[in-house]
Length: 170
Ligand SMILES: O=P(O)(O)OC[C@H]1O[C@H](OP(=O)(O)OP(=O)(O)O)[C@H](O)[C@@H]1O
Ligand SMILES: Nc1ncnc2[nH]cnc12
Image 1 (cartoon, rainbow, N blue to C red):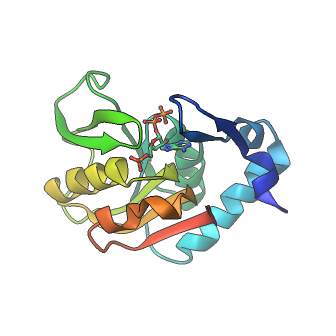
Image 2: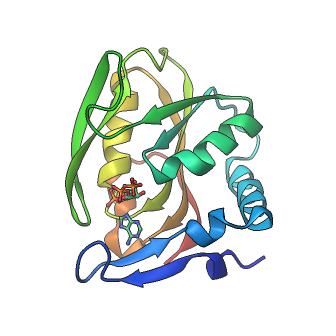
């Protein structure tokens, strides 16, 4: 299956000059998203995963599906002031702006094997901040896993040498 046909380019969204990669056609097709889950699982292989982190908001869709298949827990990493319990926060720069991410401080136990999932690796600011949160809580990052990678933005460089895998490269 050619997954690229389910990802739509939206020029100048959300700001002029940005070509937004829209995954809603992929989410809208059961065969396509099931196939995608299978392909993402192949990237992980036989590696043991205790918890999958999905990054708000588009990382939630496949993050939760992956967690179920991997028989792992799911941890939402959210934008500021959304999580109700005690949190740890990390700020970062975006391709189009800046923001911060938060995690519940009790979500990871020392030594937990963590898969970080998001839809897009762009500048790496978001995923880099998530790596920092996992490190501070004593988790072990097994893989940073993405549907797609915008290679010209060199996001991998922000991920501290952790293994990175993506299904599509643009
Ligand atoms: O590698 P980076 O440059 O950090 O960019 C990647 C991040 O940007 C997008 O999220 P966005 O902040 O647009 O939020 P959303 O998922 O809620 O739409 C995307 O889903 C990643 O989380
Ligand atoms: N070009 C892009 N398309 C979709 N999500 C993104 N996140 C950061 N850059 C993006």
